[in-house]
Amino acid sequence: MLEIAPQIRQYQFLQKSRNLIELRLAVPHPLATDAETCLAEWVRTKLGAPFTVSFAYFDEIPRTAA
Image 1 (cartoon, one colour):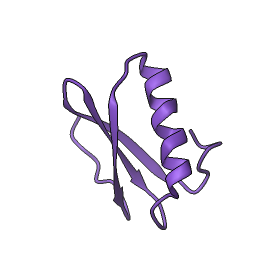
Image 2 (cartoon, one colour):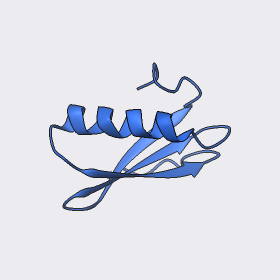
Image 3 (cartoon, rainbow, N blue to C red):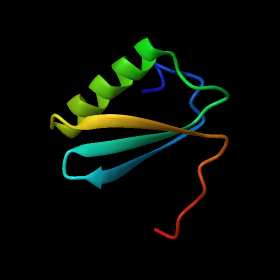
Image 4 (cartoon, one colour):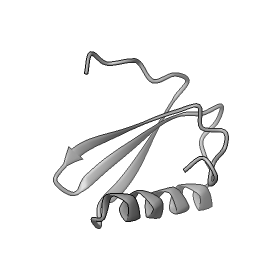
């Protein structure tokens, strides 16, 4: 993942529904469309399912209790 977008400081996957994964990214600025496309394909390949992938951008991703 970091080869595609080295500016990613943190990331988190959130399954929002059966077919939707939200990829939360802590980056200085939103990624270009081609980088989003490559990351979405990377997620689908790694997870082995044809998920729809959405993106959410943050300055910092808050830690969870999990």
